[in-house]
Length: 406
Image 1 (tube, rainbow, N blue to C red):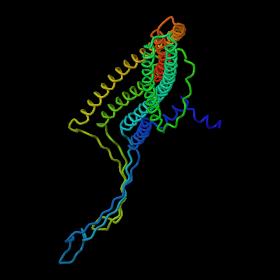
Image 2 (cartoon, rainbow, N blue to C red):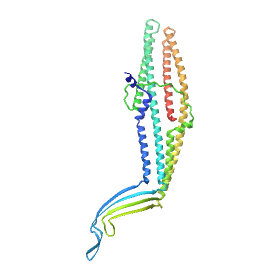
Image 3 (cartoon, rainbow, N blue to C red):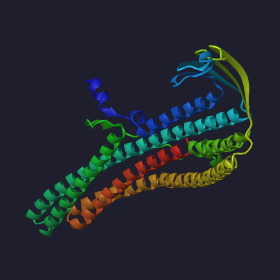
Image 4 (tube, rainbow, N blue to C red):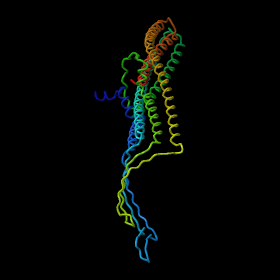
């Protein structure tokens, strides 16, 4: 029984873990990391040896031969021919191609890894916000239920007072209208709570089995931290920086396409022996390739790569400004919402006292139920305001932790 009860409570940590486990965004990011690693491996294949097998068979009619007096002395090309060979190629010097291709791929891998970390923080933020929204909406339902119970009790009390001649008959009508309004508010609160739970359980990709949510812990004060330190930790800015560095490496890679290339080449061939060609032949040699003129292709590629660097640098600067604005806005929001917590607490205490006094005045015939209904409506609003302030602060704190990469 204890194990069942323990399993029926869902904590924020469990929600975050399941959200990370079932996030399509993270699955995509992890795939991109693996893809970037394969691109690094691809870059290094530039200096890996290659081995190739070739084979061919031909028929020539008529065959080519040299002879005297109708007698064939030398067969230059017989009717049926075959050839099979193995070729080995090994690049010895790339004059910068390998260096810049590998550097570009490795820097891009770092950018993708940083992007994956940013995705994880965003999933944690989304899970936290959804969890707090579900908690807040559940508490709003409880407040609405209490309000409806109070309205029903007041209606019964008004009926008794009217029968006793201590209240006007119109009080019953007002209480009936107030009860109907409370019922409507309860329905709306339940609808919001249901939608909040749907969003939460869709996020963690499993059906809602009626688990209760663990209450939020004590509210920590707003964090005090230097803006530059927070910006330095942000993974989205780190990914943008590495992306720009990878683009710079691609500029050098494009420029290195005009460089020479030195390689080793060896071939072993077996074929039918004809004329002066032996049946088996093995050749080894060095192959030097020096591009002379490519019609301007390399130059245009370098210019394109430089413009991409400029674009990425501009995007990074804009992203840094946006991140700075976001962090400063969240710090201000956290400070204001934390101060609001104390205000809503004092407002709730005052509204509770006002409702208590209004109830006593009505019961003793010193006021109408209009005053009582207004006082209790203010008390309910103060309760709802306190709940909203509490969970809006927690949601803002979750957004700040993502923005500051905490």
